[in-house]
Image (cartoon, rainbow, N blue to C red; front, side, top):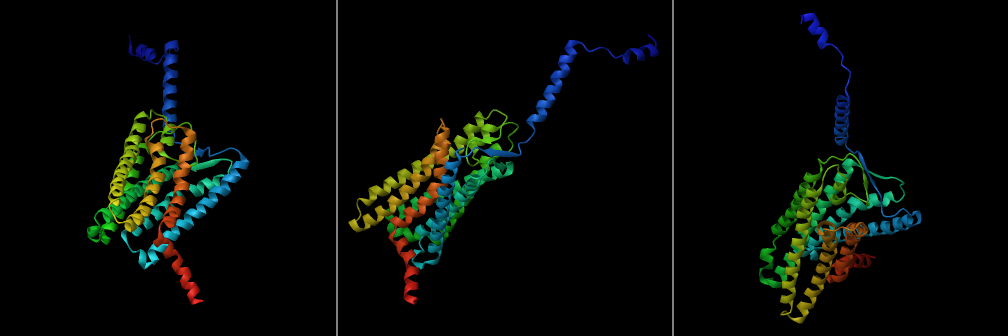
Length: 341
């Protein structure tokens, strides 16, 4: 074959066979799917708590009142502890930090939820959604450590009263709070590390009023079984272990109280009742949301509301109603004003 004939042979357009057509279509389909899988979802849509307009108006008023109470109650505790010289003790220092965290935790989700009651399309940006997840786990992890620190404070005060001032020094309390915020940060970063690079290419409806990791990762265009296990191993195990540790601690304290004089035991019991109530309110919803292997959507919604709106309101109510020193400190400025008048 001459060079001219060979060139003509190589440049000849052969008709496509059925096999080559199928191959071409398969390649183009794979390319389009590859492009789709790497297309990032730019926003998420919340389905909210209800579709009923009348019920949404009621919920708007209900949660607005709750949120105003959260802001007022927790700020009142923070300001009272910071300004009253009679409350300069480790227990109240930790209580003020707990109130600050409760205020921040509720503010991550409550304002958006309240505003969305009048929105037909409840939208949050992709970055805003993951910011919510980060802040929820940041403040949640910090509160977990603060509750453990408050249990330790009561243990030392009741079981080792002579060493209380030595153990719970000012720099120790500041260190505990720093560890709490640091633990919350590390916990939140470890949670987002699993999810931030997930491909979100399809459904973007979140069946809730805020973004949280268990619901958002289910929308990823990949198998999330391992991620679900990681969430349970991270948040679930951490929550359950902390809860068990707190129950053991309070059990030891309650056993010690039995041997105290009646006056001291009644005061200690009043304080412990408030602490144990707050622990149950905080850990109960967390265990069902992050550690329960069989989630129920309607129950998860209720627990999410309870965790982010109801508990931050109940905490200041519980601590102010059950604590005589706190009630006295809140009345003190009012008495001063009356005396000045």
